[in-house]
Length: 311
Image 1: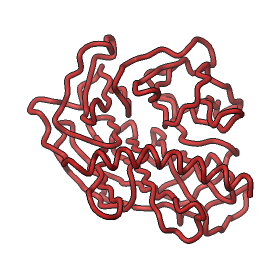
Image 2: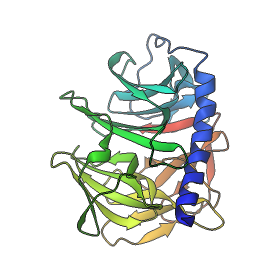
Image 3: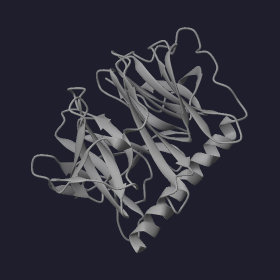
C-alpha cells in the first residue's frame, strides 16, 4: 500500500505539471510553420521555446534560436519526423498526437484522451510513441493512469494504448488490471523498445518486441528510459531518498547502473546530446551532464524543454 501511495503521488505531481500545460494550451491553437524552418537539418538542437519548436546550432546552443510557428505541449524529432503533442480544448482533457514532416507539415493525426506527457521518435524517424495522462480508470484509486501508444509511420499501423501487450514478469506471463506503460524509447532496429511499466505499486524497466508483440521486465525502479545512440546504455530516472528521483545510467551488457552527477530531482525523459552526454529539462531550461557519472550539470539553453539533438 505504501508503494502504491508513493506511485500515485508521483503520477499526480507529474500530472499537475501537465495540467498547467493543458490550461495554457487550451487558449490557443496549433499554427502553421514559419516558411523555411526545417526540422531535419543536422547539427542542430531542437526544443520547445515559449511553446513553439525552435532550433539552435549544437556548437552554439546559447545562440538566439530560430523559432518556428508550430506549437506543441510535448515534442520530439529525429530524421525529419516530428511528433508534436497538442492539447485540445474541452471539458475533459484531450490530446492530438500530430506527426509532422521535416518542414513541420502535418502527415498524420491521432486523437487521444488525456494530457500530454511524453513523446519520442526512433532514430530513423519511422517509429513514434506518446504517453498521455488520463482519468477515470476504476483500478486507479488516485484517479490517474497513463496511455502509451506506438505508431509505425511507414505502414501507418498504430496502437493507441499498449497496455494489452503480453507482459512477462520474472519470466512468467503476468496479468493485472493496473498495468500502465510510459516513456518509450526505441532501438535502431525500429522494433525493439524500452519503456516503464507500473503495477502493484512498483515500476519496472521493460524491453518490448513490437513485431512479436510481447514485453519482459529487466529490473525494478526505472522510469522514462532513453537509449544511447549506440544502443548499449539507458538513462532513466530512479526513485531515491530523499528524491523523488535521480538520473541513472544502465549498461545493458553488464546491467551495472551508475548515478549521474545531477543530484537534483529530474522529472523528465532524458535525451542524448551525443554519445557520452545526456540532456534534460529542469528549472525552466535544458541541462546536460556526462553519462558516466562524472562532471557536473551545465545549462545548455534557457526557457526550453523537450530537447532533441539532430545529428
